[in-house]
View 1: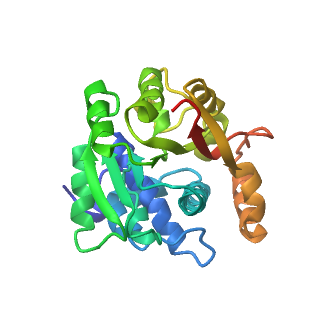
View 2: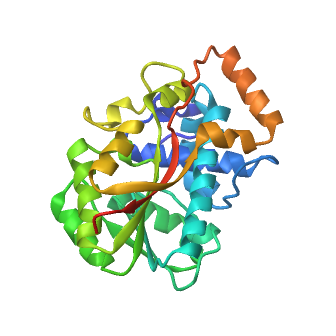
View 3: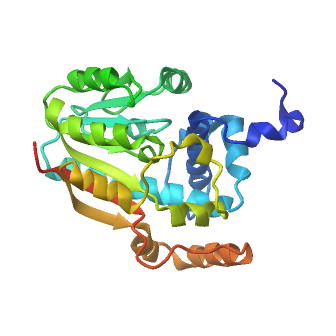
Length: 291
């Protein structure tokens, strides 16, 4: 592989789902380097690497994408910590964990069991990059393909019946509808998972950030994938009720307005089209009503 300016443009494109994890880590790294950043992640830059930074910087509205990646992570952090304080939860399971760093950067109870699930190559890459760092709670990795029934059954057996919370951050849009339904149905039936912290992004919101009818991740998503309100409707149909909501539209009002104004100006200059009022994109905490 060549380096520096000799790298071909192709290497800035998103070729597989692992590239999206590198890109998201790069966004967290850029936010960490800003004085007005919404997030502090001291591990993000080493996880993103040169490829992740190159992919992120190639986005048409790079600053806007970094802003929303950081806002998503921050809102998830806040809802997670609040739920751990108020509810009896012994285990957190992060599905499609990618390059998440919460076990290292958040103040978590040392007795908490934190399980992260992803493909073997992603887990190995992350373990190598963070080999010298110690998580703040009990931490384990589990390799699984969530579209495979046998992998899901093995995962839920491994999780066990202790009270648990499931995280899906940036994952659901990559699942076929059948896998989504199976995951939502089986989690509380086969394990102690009773809470689900998830994010949703509407198609309108994604087109706004990527400034186009088709996003660079379109080829990674199955044709019958769910998005936006469709995810919430499918979760509800599978026995989950939203008990806390943090939409991006509402939460932006709490961000320093000087930064919001700069983002809006850049967005308008680029000819962007904002999502309609009432867009559901944001973070949702759901509770199983059938378990």
